[in-house]
Amino acid sequence: MLSLSNIAVSYDGSRILRGASLDVQPGTVVCLMGRNGVGKTTTLKATVGLVKTDGGSVKLGDAELGTLKPDARARAGIGYVPQGRDIFPNLTVWENLRIGAIAQGRKLNGEVDRVMTLFPILKEMLQRKGGVLSGGQQQQLAIGRALLTNPKVLLLDEPTEGIQPNIIDQIGETIKKLRTRGLNDDDPKRVEEIGNAIKTLRQEGQIGILLVEQYLDFCLDVGDRFYIMDRGAIVAQGPIANLNDAIVKEHLTV
Ligand SMILES: Nc1ncnc2c1ncn2[C@@H]1O[C@H](COP(=O)(O)OP(=O)(O)O)[C@@H](O)[C@H]1O
Ligand SMILES: [Mg+2]
Image (tube, rainbow, N blue to C red; front, side, top):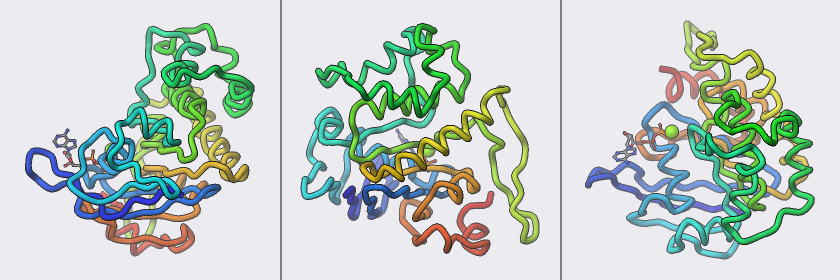
């Protein structure tokens, strides 16, 4: 459904993406992994039209989106939750949820109930300001908002960042999770709910999900396929079951 082929992006004359290609099918979760700075976020930004590409194509079904502005790509069916979530701290949860649909000039119908079912805590907090939510709650809000734009494909940029035991490390052959940093009390539960929401969407089979994620266990739990990026290129890919220690050691550990 979503098909990126040979995407090239440069910042200030230096090549950041060197011909990245990947595919996402409906009802599947595709994990885009790689160390910090390899170009994962840039890949998503190129998909939604927030950075200019030097070449390549972005197709959704048969439609070429590569020349369209971000709002037109959103209308075509690309939903995007940026890294760091980007909710409006001074708007209420309810206003935050509606804003994507408002921008598209649409009324919301039953879709809100669906988001409340996926993320029950939001229902209790509809009138609270987005800024008072925990990191995990804000992430759910950002995903909920993106879902309300009715996407065909949903791009999630590190949804568990800062709300889970982060950073993977490898000591000998053992993959270990290190450090818990800045964890809010309720956030482990939010991570679990986000994982469950992703699985629910996968089961429903309508939406394809492209998940940028450094939390290996999360990818192993929710992913169908993986792509690993290194220095702006895809260097490994396959069914998630093929993600083995050797690949992790070569491309993911710090
Ligand atoms: N707006 C920008 N201007 C210049 N360089 C950038 C910009 N955004 C990202 N970069 C650089 O591009 C590379 C890829 O960044 P990014 O796509 O954010 O990586 P990742 O998401 O994999 O951590 C990094 O070296 C980063 O420093
Ligand atoms: Mg990033």
